[in-house]
Amino acid sequence: MKLTWKDVTISLGITLVVAFVSFYVLLPAVNIHDKVFTGWLSVMLALFAVLCFVRKGWRGQGNPFADGFHWGVAEICLVAAAGLFVLCMVWGFISSTKIFHASAYQKLLNVQEGNFTEDVEEIHFDQIPMLDEESAKKLGDRKMGELVDMVSQFEVADDYSQINYQGRPVRVTPLEYSDLIKWFNNVGEGLPAYIMIDMVTQEVTVHRLEEGMKISMSDHFGRYLPRHLRFRYPTFLFDPAIFEVDDDGHPYWVVPRVDYTIGLYGGKDIVGVVLCDAVTGDTQYYDLADVPQWIDRAFSSDLLVEQFDNWGSLKHGFWNSIFGQRDSLRATQGYNYLAMNDDIYMYTGVTSVVSDQSNVGFLLVNQRTKEAKYYSVPGADEASAQASAEGQVQNLRYTATFPLLLNIGGQPTYFVALKDDAQLVKKYAMVNVERYQIVGIGDTPEQCEKEYIRLLSEQGIQTEGSSAVQTHTAAIAEIRTAVKDGNSYYYLRLSDLPMYFIVPVQTMQEVVTYNVGDTVEVQYAPTEGSTLQTIIAIQKK
View 1 (tube, rainbow, N blue to C red):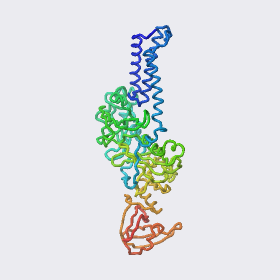
View 2 (tube, rainbow, N blue to C red):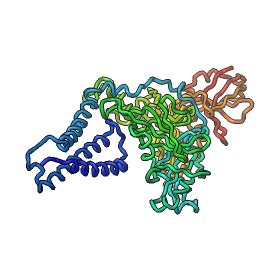
View 3 (cartoon, rainbow, N blue to C red):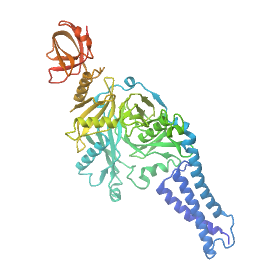
View 4 (tube, helix red, strand yellow):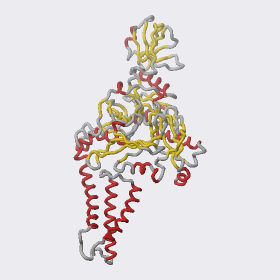
């Protein structure tokens, strides 16, 4: 007994209903590179075939093959479903595996050699983010608890995006609906505000909007952001959306467009960005080269780390990355963000694949353009720097945030904030990358920097250009000497200053030739309230 047009029509109708509902829920991209789409299509073809067999078996009293096997529409669809699934799995693996495409994977990230002192300029402390994401969440939750008119209807979203806002590093996050009932109660007005946390001052502000956000991750039906975008860009593959605000404070969703550049499922990269107005829902697509500069993040940190690991480990092919591992590098376990030139840069340390607690350098990648630079600066890894900073305040049981890498007087320096159990920042620490035993601690970043430079000077390490360093020229009024821990020190008092300057003879031997009355120029980091100041550099004029 063969299928009738009625059998085909009923089976097709049921399949289309199931296909629409499942597509509406799953939201796959109509793209062969999307595993969800190929799986969904295979299941729909198989469902149609099964329904046809059921109709045929029902009319044939339970045996769909009572009159023998015939190549019909149901059989073709069933074979097509199995073939599509097997082809995508097999061809997807073969066309995407690193075994056959190591060189292509290695070239996904173009890494250039950088010069640390030239590329990483010293930045003011009002541009350095002091908080990590965990601390920002604590502050955001506390602020939400103070908003009596909102706390019963809304919650704070978990994703705190770090961006540059009017030249300052901040984290922003939207409010979201507490549950479906709260969504129905407030759907007309939308989400009324977002929260911004200043990463320097720890100030939390609620930005109330004149018109609420109608498109978000906590909305439903057509206002749910992934669904809103899917029906406008049915073939696009997307990375997770990022919440940002422009310099006028208007909220947007930045949604990176993904492409797989190696085979079916390999070589994931970002080729553009869809910008969605969170209030109106208007969208605009930009190719990567045309992304507006105020947008800070097109590439996720995890993707950049993955691409760098491929760059560092596949230089000499796939098998070397497994066995010989010659010249193989990888990123350390963690990353942070640095704001420079109105862009956000991802920072991570770089270590060899067989290293223990040391770095061979570090990586900075622009998260908007993917410009990547590697800096060869051997020293302690981030975990060692955190442990060294915590060791200086172990009696207080503070914990260190993941370090930022700063240029302090030409010295690569880890900067960490020290938090108490309530996730509030209490102190700051600077740890020298090459000599992580040198740790400066202070209640403010400025105090921390001065203490750090003083410790560098005691170890004979000269710094240049630091904002904490002062220069003074005067005649020597008095010279004294002392021996401390087996080392000789000169104590110089200048004619117009009351304090003494400590000069270590072992690193500045020319001081033994100076006499009272000689005019000298000294560089030092002032320590408030102390009559002893440590010299960073000295020369006769």
